[in-house]
Amino acid sequence: MSAALYTRDILRLAVSIPHQQRLEKPDGSAELRSRTCGSVVAADVIVSDNGEIAELGMIISACALGQASAAILGAEAIGRTQSDIVKAQSGLHAFFDKRADSPGDWQNMDKLEAAREHKGRHAAILLPYDALVAALADAAERKAA
Image 1 (tube, one colour):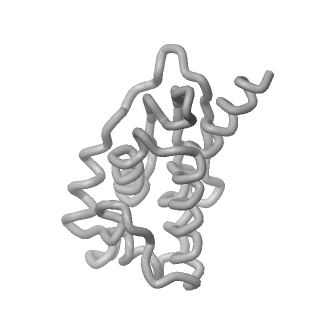
Image 2 (cartoon, rainbow, N blue to C red):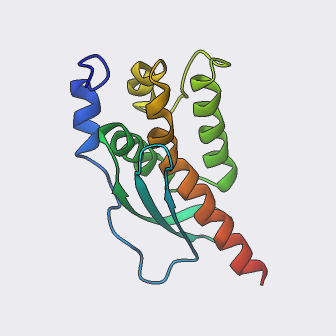
């Protein structure tokens, strides 16, 4: 492990993931596994009538970077729309692909900057966002059905 990669801030975030539970009756759910690192994230959502995330549940089995990423997402997700989550996910992708100078403007996103040069860790960091986007898509499909 690189000391520069697993900073004290990353480790603090990794142990502070909010919403760590499955929801009893979610509007949408998804469980994704990273083929790169084996991390697993399950996400459940309840979406309000105006399209905002009202409740979130996540189960995270990932490295400290994946856990820190999930903590950042969990702290920001309530009250956000699918579009907001996709925008944050796209911003992270752009940062890791060196098409953006910052990983995003959410609180603590800057803590992920050290991972930019560690391509093998990008999948674990993006996985919580991917799972939440998939859970939101599942909620939209169920609502439309």
